[in-house]
Length: 124
Image (cartoon, rainbow, N blue to C red):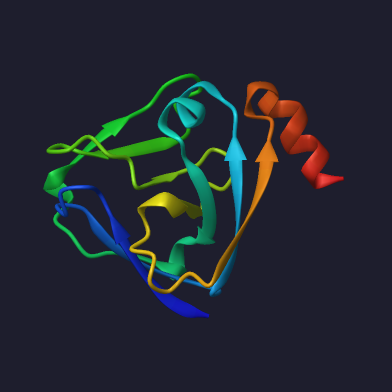
């Protein structure tokens, strides 16, 4: 495990996340992830530390209102959020990591357009 750093474009939102050097991420095709190019690195909440003032963030919820999508109020980038699939975890956008600590990245597709069926198939 290494300490990765990341955040939004303008730097107002910054965080640290403990994860392997070789990361595995999901590329979801749902409406919000595909439009933003999000690559999910999901970690337990205890492995994530926000290193910025929460006042710099805006919250967006849609659909089931379960996921908590946090955006920078200044630049609009969503560099992390609390996903519906892992309510006790954090999904970090691997594209928002600073890049110096990631050795390799394996990208796996996830069919978020059919979210319920896709989540069920992961459980079996």
